[in-house]
Length: 221
Image (cartoon, rainbow, N blue to C red; front, side, top):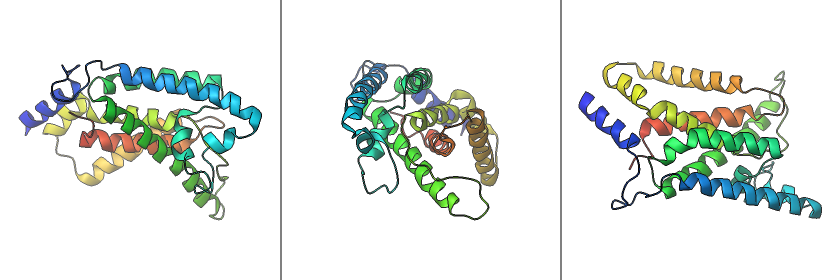
């Protein structure tokens, strides 16, 4: 059991491949590509704002069926230069190790899907909670930004690094306790980033999805 876990860990952490097995030869390029998309989308946001269509193109807002493309486009859009820079820094820090251990296609798919899940969770769950009596929460009018995807990358790193893999190989933890620890960690990380205007449910959902994906090694090649 320990031998198999060690092999999985090495698979995740192995640096760039020569490309013979379908992996990328320049592992950092997905990060650079996402940053380029960030910059291009930010410029387009500024141009479309003058035409009054920026929200329809990039802001994920209820009902989700009105502008369904924003489920994806909102992941790469930002509310301002500060928002853009903070997500850029977080993407480089948390995303680079993941990018080095997977293929370009898998990285981009993971980033877009987890970001979309986080954004949808923010809109849907705040709408549901706002309808519950005595719950002091307002429905989200709109959300945009890569924070959910970045938190998913962080969750993936937490769940798939050598230390967590080593502990899982020789510590027999009940499933209910593992779930409790994961949820508790997601709550702690989410609250650590709490501030006015922050999409906390998106952060929570992204981190939680990332942890589950990390345990499942969905990005391992």
